Image (cartoon, rainbow over all chains, first blue to last red; front, top):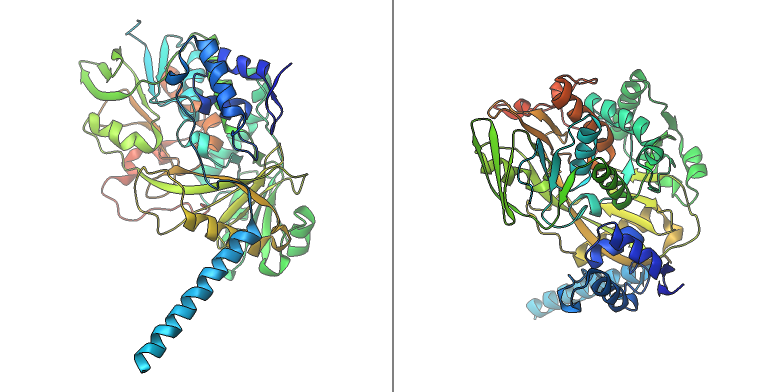
Length: 105
Length: 380
């Protein structure tokens, strides 16, 4: 048994079974067995799954439809996003007060 | 390649595959599905995955109740695991207007025989312990609602339809339609198909399909964004919805929390990219409602299209201008939860000429020359 997607514990057999059901693209594999949906977003398994697809469908790797890359680039905590939002707001307030001072002078 | 079918379904989302399956089950085995990309590549594969029966209009509640009845036995019938889970739906009211509206909704839902209750903030906090109870006035709770994996349900229907003899043409784009003496000619980039009965299940692209036959299908697509967090241990069971904060959140079976929101400033269009604005806004809304969960990590965000009609209810059944051109579209973001019942009704309509539940009030003619509608209010 070979583990292909280590975030979601997906084995090669599961991926081959999905291809036998009619999956021909990385996106379909992702949706059916969740390979590439874990915290690393398919950075490890994307190429492996592409190779399995190419092997099973007897097509060159270049002809396998790639999956969509989705933000964020790596897992982000909610509090970090909120902190960034607050920093931007504070900066805007600072800018606004500065331009007011400038006008007064 | 076979080019003549007894029925052709345009669209390989949940509506398309479930209608194909029900038709095949009712005896019309020579049918096919035409899909632009792959199964569930449109709105179905991008949705939140919940099913609920708590609606503000009668037709939606009726259809949703029939759907849940059917979903309860769908895994055995289709012989496929779908992550079906009846964890309930908790809908939160934050304002006095909402309290009045929810009381009205619950009264109507109870009249139709739905087991739904009004709970106070403390009881709501017992159901979902991470909620901020200060923001809530009351909540409605229906334990038979729940969630399901949309990809697996679509695949389950598709596999079952294939077993009964239906064909599925993936990566086939419909480029034109023509009707000549009772036969539809479906022009695609893979060749021409002929059929006497045509179904429009193209979701957000239903308007374009209608235009190919010179009829107006009043559906506009709007982008709705959604995100998922890393898998964590069980936090809560139900889907939580708040219309005033404007979010829905549920925990998937594998542990990730899926949440999305509606944006009233979203323009009409079929763009499905992600935006930074959504990530900021969603984080703000989520942490207002769940102040203890600020440490959760966002793994991925994406977007899908709501195919909105003017009253946020679907367009079902035949249309007057063209015979045998059936519509099952315009579900306004709730196709997955209504599909199991709708597909059965559509198959009944075609094979028996009548339906077991009334669908006349969802006929397309309600939009012709009318300015005011009984709009569905329970939409995020």
